[in-house]
Length: 307
Ligand code: CP
Image 1 (cartoon, rainbow, N blue to C red):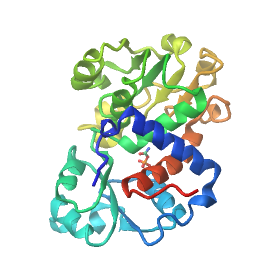
Image 2 (tube, helix red, strand yellow; image 1 turned 90 degrees about the vertical axis):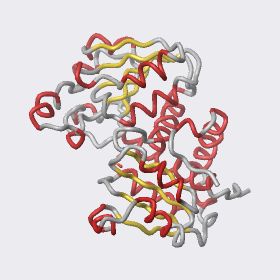
Image 3 (tube, rainbow, N blue to C red; image 1 turned 90 degrees about the horizontal axis):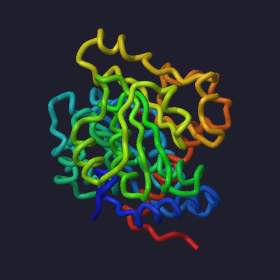
Image 4 (tube, rainbow, N blue to C red; image 1 turned 45 degrees about the horizontal axis):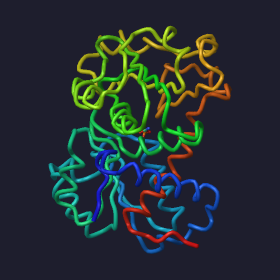
């Protein structure tokens, strides 16, 4: 039995296979409509979500399976004090696979240690968000045809942004990938990402605070939201929340083939006037999230690809 807790739980070859399967699903959706007949996905969401929870549910329904779960801690027995360990033991009696989002870092790891079914980390605090990373990788591969030889700008909340941490960990495995880490001083990447991931893998990167100066050299710009829910005080959040706003004027500084990704939700960091720019890829990215999660569910449930 396999779990997905961190993007590095999957080898580069396994990620290639998942993306190939997801592309086949994208182009032949009906072929997959019964491959998970009789299987159940539990979505255990202790934190708010639109895309991750609903794309998981859409993915399982597209595969012919069923979905059960809860969308907030308040509506589960966590509100009565039940532990993650006990909850997942019980859910293992009800479902074949579980996707779990939790505000505490490491919660999905704990769940996996007590589960009788595969557990997918759908976001654990400010730590990791591996299925967003699979979505991001599928998007980058679809837009650029490769993961190699590119400069990726990551902009916004790089401290608490779990999607940023997961994507950096995944991308350092490909040749000649460089990073420009664009953030205010207070929201720079955690030291374990700088030391144990970037420096340890001899990756070229720089940390800057000026988006305009960085834009011309980027092949991908990964924008992120400043996450109100991770701040300890309102004053810091208010000071930093609009530090970066990508607009049409700034897009003129970027290459013609630089694509803008964002895990969403966005607040103010990308002006809606950018949405119609052909380089704005964030809504396509959300669509890819369904296909890659279908591929992941099939893989973890060891479901055969149909002919
Ligand atoms: N990208 C993402 O995780 O979105 P949700 O919080 O809506 O699931």
